[in-house]
Each structure stands twice: as structure tokens, then as C-alpha cells.
Length: 548
Image (cartoon, rainbow, N blue to C red; front, side):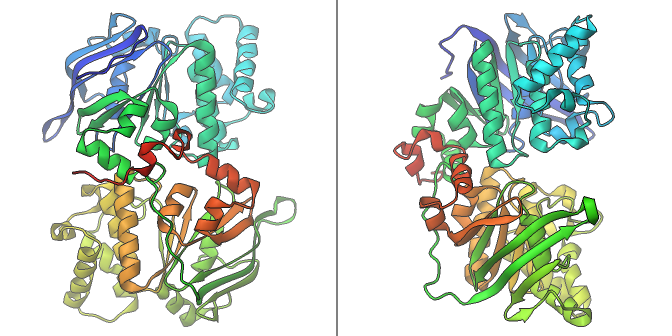
């Protein structure tokens, strides 16, 4: 049964079917999708990658790729039928009636135009002829979305702004003409949790002021729980279920929605991991300091940071972009020498290692990057990618090397037939498993994971986190887990260091830091975790069932 809004309907989608025409033939990606959005309402379109949510959103605003086609169904916006419109016809309503906030602020702004010019462009396209009036409106919009010194920002270029600031610029463009509908396509997925929180607050405020409706496209049920009036769950192009947010999250009916809830770390938190009673430190970081540049250009990226990691446990480094967490991790794996301080691994000072000793150290400490696609050679077979470290560190026959690589591929839960494929033929989750297999094939004692699950859908993320926990239990591995997501920290880590502006503001057991944060900054991070607005008494926060 379909769930429709109680307010006057603004957008009505009925039985929408969309396909892409590919060299191998037609592939249907949206199949019979129906839902509506009322005036001033927020509807979340939720699903994993490949579910059809972005394609559905693109069809509403006429931005399907050239090989995309609406095969059947209806899209009515303010009673106008859009499904048969040519692309050029959408120019009259884009920005004025319906606007888009895209996912990636870094690639959505023109790098050679000032911010002011780019905001002004939407006004020019829709008839604002007076240059002074346009300039005044640009400054008003930049100020309204929370950018300090709008006159300065208007004259800057995108590379001079942070990710959160660029996303605010895109929001300013989207709301400039007070459209009836804003499509927010994963508008905060690339942002730190506190910046995400502020951006979503801003969208809520602007919506409340002008009565704009929002279609929020997201894979994060925590965000949907906080922000949406209703939720539509998509899977493989179909609507699995839909309804009011609180009711659907409290009593999901489809196995898929139940699985999404079970996998969302902020909505279905598990208990804290038990730390060893008498921990023996495997890694000790003491008074770490990292400077870049010289003179007036000198930047202090890490300032007197200390923490230790017990053998066989996971320690998390948490903080916003620019907090120094990745810089600290790079020093620990030996990719850069710290300006000062000490890093002891199994009692050995590693900051002064050189030559063969430094090479052997890198065998014991392996790094797993954030983006598995860019860290894997697209020209190699998976078997060769996983086996490559063995060529550098061990003298083995080709057969022995392939056998070791194949065994590790099996250990990380990949099917045997992936060994002959290349990375392009694998999903994001499968590629991350390949990256983990490559890191483990040398049987290292320590693994540093830099935002290793932040680019993954929540279900795939849960699978990778479970895999890491299983491998740690089996192999006695010690992990340093770099992330900006505290809900993930709760699931994977025993201890945590919270970093801000290059300094460690808090270090301790995850259970203690989460329940009794000593730093206001840590409290802010915890408060920004999506899904917390439902409250601890809400049934979804205690939901523990997986798909039946």
C-alpha cells in the first residue's frame, strides 16, 4: 500500500520505470516506483548504491545521462507532467521551481569562476537584469547560509573554501529563487559529522522559512531518522516499503529495511567492545609533532599528541578534517618522518629507522586507504594485486605466491572467481576486501585503516567492520582506525583519541568517552551522530534483528 502525504501534493511519481542503454543492451534500474511529496514536506529516498535513488531524483529535474530513458510512468510537479519533457524545457524550472543540491561540492563548482559569479549565474538565468540587485542578493544568500564575510567569499574561488563552505555555496544557489522543491542528493555524505549536522540544520531552517519541500536522497538511515517526515526505501529499483519515519523505523515490515536498521551503527548500536584488563602496549606514540612548510608558511598539523594501543585491540583516531588524524597515521606507518616525538612499535623506535630495517618495518605495519578503487591498479587481476607484496618481500615461486594470495582472498570472504577479474568488475565492498587482503597477505602484526569504510553503503560497511573484527580475533591483529564517524568507533574500537586542530583533546576507553565525555568538543561530536534525535527510548535504537 502506498503512503501519501496529508498536505497538498507537490510531487507525484507513479509507476516510474527508467532504463539505461548500454553496449551490452538495455538495463532497467528503476521499476514501477511510486511516491508523493507534499508542500513543505521532507521525504527521504533511502537505499544502497545501485538501488535507483539517484536515477529517480535525476529524472525529476531532467538530468538523466544521455543513455538514460524514462520507459513508462508519470512525474507530476505542481500538476505539470514532466516525464515527456525534452531536456531544454527543464531550463525554465531548474532553480526556480525545483533545485538540486549535488553530492560532491568539490566537483560541482566551476574552479575558474569566483563564488559570487557562480551564485549570481542562477539569478541571471531567471531574469535578474539589475547587476546591483544581483550582487546584493548574492551577498544576502552567502550570509544566510552562514558564510562569514560574504563580500570576501564572493571574490574567492572554490579551492579557497573548505568542503563544508563549498556545500553552503551550493545550498545558496539552490535556495536563491525559493523553489517549491529541493532535491538534496547525498548532500553531506562527503562531510565530517559535525559539518554534516550544521548543513542539515541549515536546510531545515531554510525549508521552514519558505515552505520548500525536500527530497532527501541518502543511504544513511540515521540522517533520514533525524530529518525526514516520511521514508521511501528503495532496493534494486523497487520500493520495498514507505511510510511515516517514526512508524517505519519502529516497525519495518520488509526484510531489507530490517537489515538496513540492523546495519546502521547510529540506529542500532551494539554494546561497547571489552578492552583487555592488563593491556600490553604494542604501539606507543609520545609527544608526536608534525610541521609542514617553513617560516610564515609553516603549518603545525600535529601538536604534542600521545596515545598507546594495546596488542590485539583497535584504537580509533577521531576528528574533523584538518584535525591531524591522517597526518598522525602516516607518521606511524612510516610514510613521513615526524618533526619530533617518538613512535615505539613493540619497543622499537621507528622514527629513526633507515635502509633494510625501515623496509622490514613496513612489512609489519600495513595501510588500508579510504578509496579502494584509486588504490588498486585497474590493469591488474585481483590475484596479482593481492600477491604483489609477496614479490617485494618474499622469494616464492609464482605458484606458491598465487596460492598464498588465493588463500587470503578466500579468508576475506570473496568468491574464488574474483581472482581473474580486475577492480572495475567488483563492487565497492568487494574492492575494499581486496585492499584488506593485500594488506594482510604478508601477515603483518599491525593494520592502519584510514577512513576505510567511510565511502561504503551502510550494509557493506557493516560487513567490512564485522570482517575486521573476525580477522582481529583470528590473527591477533592490532588496528589503528582513522575515522570522523563516532558511531563506527563504537562498533569497532576498544579505545579512542579525539583530535581537534592537531591536538588530542581526549583519550580513553570508548565506553568511558561515549558515556562521560570530558571535552566539550567530544560532546559536540557525539551530539552530531545521526539518529540521536529519536531518543534512547525509541524502539529502533534497541532493534537487534537482522533480515529474516
